[in-house]
Image 1 (spheres, rainbow, N blue to C red):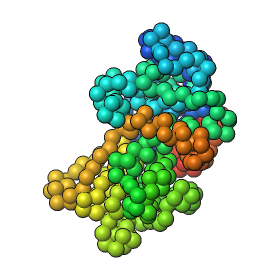
Image 2: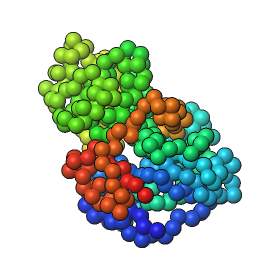
Image 3: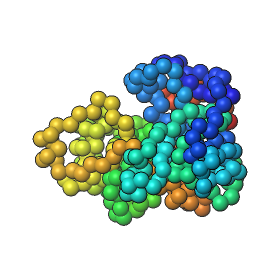
Image 4: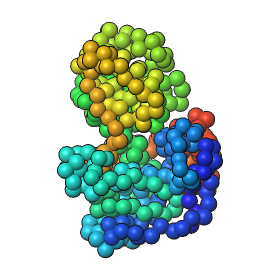
Length: 338
């Protein structure tokens, strides 16, 4: 088959690779119904995250099981499944505590920007639907695999609850999903920080009540103005840069909480500022598996439509254009049809 391989900064190729095979008895092979490009894929694409040699790309996926290993018990061929980018057994102490992304057997999914993929730890990672979903639901179910689950974790980690005042730093796909999550969790006010009209419009559709275009000290001052000098109860940091983290810290009220899901690049903290700021922090790789059943039900029941975040759809053999469009901010998130 052909699959997406990143050779170096800006060098993405769709080329022939070996077909995925069962390697361990806990594996499954799925035929993807769709896949996509993640904002985190842009870090190595831009040369900001080193890779050792060619890398098989893709970690967001949904599709139909075609083969399972001899030890797989709960997943069977013919089922439509969604899985997390973190592969987990869902039985270890960390999984049972709700942090499957820190599973004692954790692996990270790769090679999903392809027609077929191997999923390790299939029983613990994959969640099956009761029946085969219609094609119209595929984008929304695909979004639950990572981008929605990550935005949901940002809101959950930030302790968003009924009546909360929330600020979202980052208007990429994860930030927009954080807006949707905050709305679903009952936030009364959701401040989205965005300078881009199309992203502002989608943020409002997902539930944002206010848009802040300013950055840095001006952005912090604007959030404080909107909250009568108090700051937000919950802040979602969905970028991973020093500027974004500093923005998140200063926009959070004392006693408030920051949920950070942007993969950190060059982020440092000042101990004195943390000490006197009195803000809670929780984040890291999202335990998407914890949320998957609920998020999939919300999609299947028509309550949410997270797939609207895909504003560019391309056949998978045009994956290089998908990366370029996201890198140049011509697209929020690219879905790849297979």
